[in-house]
Amino acid sequence: MRRILLSLVLLMLPALAMAQSVNVSVNVDTSKPGAEISRHIYGQFVEHLGRGIYEGIWVGANSKIPNIRGYRSDVVAALKNIKVPVMRWPGGCFADLYDWRDGIGPRAKRPVRVNVHWGGVTEDNSFGTHEFLNLAELVGAEAYVSINVGTLTPYDASQWLEYMTSDSKSSLANERRRNGRDKPWKVKFVGIGNETWGCGGNMRPEYAADIQRRYATFANTPRDMGTLKIASGSHDDNYEFAEVMMKNGGRFDGLSVHYYTVPRVFRDKGAATGFPEAEWASTLGHARHVETIVTKTAEIMDKYDPARKIGLYFDEWGTWYDQEPGSTPGFLYQQNTLRDAEVAALHLNIFHRHTDRVKMANIAQMINVLQAMILTDKEKMVLTPTYHVFEMYVPFQGATPYPASVSGGGYRNGDSNLPSVDVSAARGKDGKLYLSLVNLDPNRPAHVVTNLSGTAKGRILTGAAMDTRNTFAAPHAIRPVPFSGSSDNGKLAFDLPAKAVAVVAVE
Figure 1 (tube, rainbow, N blue to C red):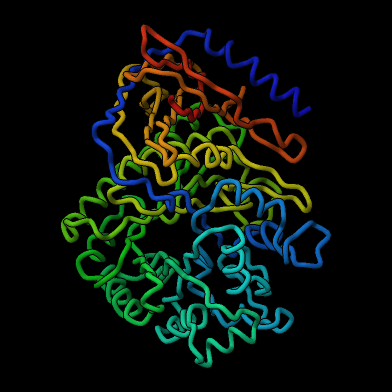
Figure 2 (tube, rainbow, N blue to C red; figure 1 turned 90 degrees about the vertical axis):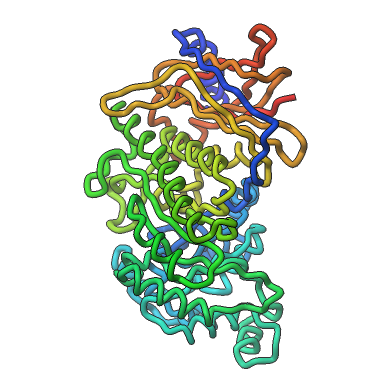
């Protein structure tokens, strides 16, 4: 079945290319290199929500599902493959009701709590501080820990960070050692709260800025660890929090912003599959709005930080649809389709264009929740189209971006007026020039002519339908296949199928 599906996709590519194409020109200016693309832009977010952790990551050492000390072996291998640079934990809304002491010590003795934010289910805390930080090490990712500023004190935050990072003979460091970890962990990023404008406390901007100043004062790790402190900033088009935090929030290293992409409006989001073309177009249009949010937030930051020492951390982003019918209420489980792959590619390309400010981004969420990399069902695992985009984009981690302008074409559907093609270009650490090409039009292929010369080979992700997806019955229905460029009057050109994401290396 896998070979048949792959063959169908390969056969489909030339047929699509023969359809009436839109002519698009791309100009890459290699004389103007930008700031390095931080690998942390490819970060992940994992919260105690639904099956994101339990079953998704953690099954326990006694599970029949193959595991490494309780972590699913298949998931660990998949995460290593996309070179996950950073993981954000424990939330999200969960973080501001989380007592770190619930998640340390013998698992059988840990208290059971109610997860009031997500489904009202019980949380046995079998996945806590040790389990998260050991997972980050196992995968090769850096740790981004969100401290609780909603229901705990600065003293609690200080104690938790000492427990995790101290190499002294203090009581907390020795308690960590008794719990099985001699060497302190490295905590590279500390979030000073989460969504203080909402579930993190429903604070006014001025009060949130004062909270930031207070907690950041005590949220310390050893100086040589180089930990960065991230302030809770704005969301969507609500820029007031960013303004007040930059002006009155004291010293911090990064400002967070959150934005979720929906087809319609937040209270009536739309389905993850079986959607009409109008919702394909509106979803991609809403995804592209991220560029406006980044630009306007950066303008605010420039007023107070003209040297651009403070990073913009887009630490929650992704698609949010109506929950899958039949799934547990509050678990935010949704399918993942070719549309999500395009949303991911558009976000990453936008972040590439703003590397002077954007220093981290964390897609929500890693497994079984919202725009997930991976879906699991007991012993089964599926890689989503979004996962494949992240894997295709690995060469952009740490690369040097170049400006890329696009002209020609266009895609319109109802109120949505979009470009035919979106492009990102960067010089990888291996010295090769990489191009990402996204065809937003679900109907028409694009003949893309660049100002570059040479040859180009890589891979492309596309499908027969806008909601092409992988399922547990057909786990390889959509996956990257080989793709290459051609010559058009001596210029490097590409015949890009409709609704496709391609990444190529130019030689």
